[in-house]
Image (cartoon, rainbow, N blue to C red; front, side):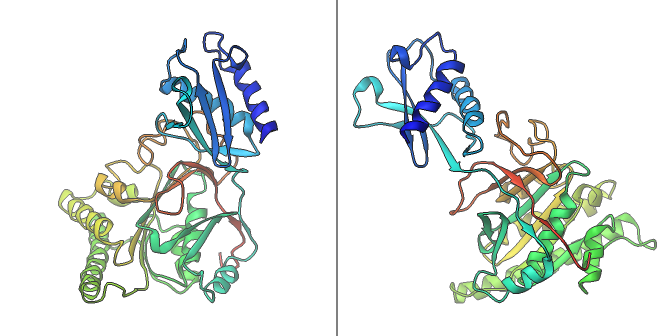
Length: 356
C-alpha cells in the first residue's frame, strides 16, 4: 500500500495543477484503503473542493491505476468525514475502486453451459463477466441499448439461453430477427409480425400477452398475501427493438401497450415477472419513463458518451471511464444489495451456440 500511495501521489502532484499546490507544500495528502483512496485537502486551501476538482482527480487516478484498479465512477462529489484527524484535515474526497479490470467471460457451448448450471443451487445466478454476476431473484427489469452493430442481439441471445431453463419466456421480436430464430431452434414460440396482420394488430397481440402476464401477477399477489415465503418460477417478457414495435402504431393501441408495460414493471418484481427491453434508443418514445425508472440492470453497448447514455444513465458523466474497444463492450449498472451502484465498464460474454 505504501508503494501504491507514493505512485498515486506523484501522479496527482504532476497532473492536478491546483494553483501549484502539491504534497510537497503540504497542501494535500493521500490515504489508501482496501476499497479505494481518499484525497485529503489541508485547510485553509487555495483551491475549491467542488465537482470539477473531484472529476479531475478521478480522470487522473483512473488512468494512472489502470489496469490494476478500476475506479468507480460517481455521479457527484463524494465526501467522507475523518473524525480522528485535526480540523484542518478532517474531511476528504473518497474514490472507491474495484481491483483489476472487467474481464470477458468465454463460454465454448452456451446450451451445455446453462444446462449444467440448471442442475446446481446457483441456477438463478447469471454470470455476465468474470467475477461479476446477477441474481435473477433480485432483478426487476433489464434494459439493453446501443447503436446498430454494437452487439445487442448477441448479448440478448446469451440472456435468452441463460433464462431458458429457469424462466418461462415470452419473446417479442418485431423485426423477426435473431430472437425469433433462437426461439425456433429451441422449440419456443416468438411473437413476430406476419404479412397478414397490420402493425396495430401485431401490437395488440403483444398487449394480449402482457395482459396474460398481468393475470399471473395478480394471481401470485394473492398467493403471496397468504404465504409471503412462497417462491415462483420466473416469467420473463423479452422485447427486442422496442421502438420498432411501437413506432407508427395507432395511439390508442400504443397507449394500451405502454400502460400494460408500466404495470408489469411496477408490480412484477415481487411476483417474479420480469421485463427485458432491447433497443437502439430507449427514450420516452420507446418505453415509458416509469418503466425506465424500474430498471435495475442497465447495459449500454457501443459508443459511450453523454448523448448515448442520457436515457439509461441520466446522471452519469462518462468522461474518464476506460471502456474496452470491440463489439459487445460498453457500461453496466446493477442496482441491488450486492453490487456497487456505480456504472462499470462491461464486456459481454463471448460464446459458441450450437443451435444458432
